[in-house]
Image 1: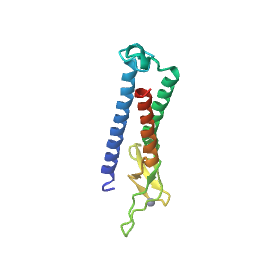
Image 2: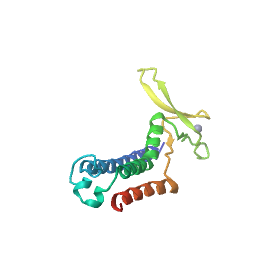
Image 3: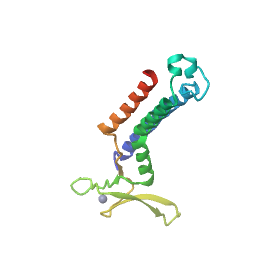
Image 4: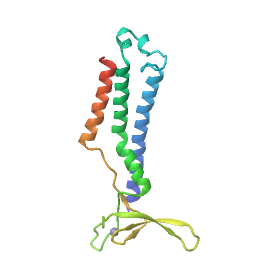
Length: 166
Ligand SMILES: [Zn+2]
């Protein structure tokens, strides 16, 4: 209850930053697309306009690039999307109730809505499996592990190879 709201704000801020980063990446891809890099749109980067070597960029290579780019975006964002959904539906929450010794309960808890008898307004509460009711709960986001980070870096490297080395 004490530091938790702060932690939550920090979490939202981090997510927002990550979503912002993803948007930049996606925006960058669209920007390149409209410059004609992928050959679908006529622009300064259209293969035919930047030389013979890139003009040889066949349909297969464009498909490969789109594949790795999609792979990269998914690898970058899956845990953020998962966390956002978890956060909205109120899963991955644990109880923050402290016992007499000052230890946090930590049991799995769920979001419940209670109707206020006085003004019929709904209040959100968190009820853990041990029966504690709190006005707040601790959220546990999924973080990318080493493998996840390796996957998105690999996908990015493949994009770069297709773009610049073929
Ligand atoms: Zn509890």
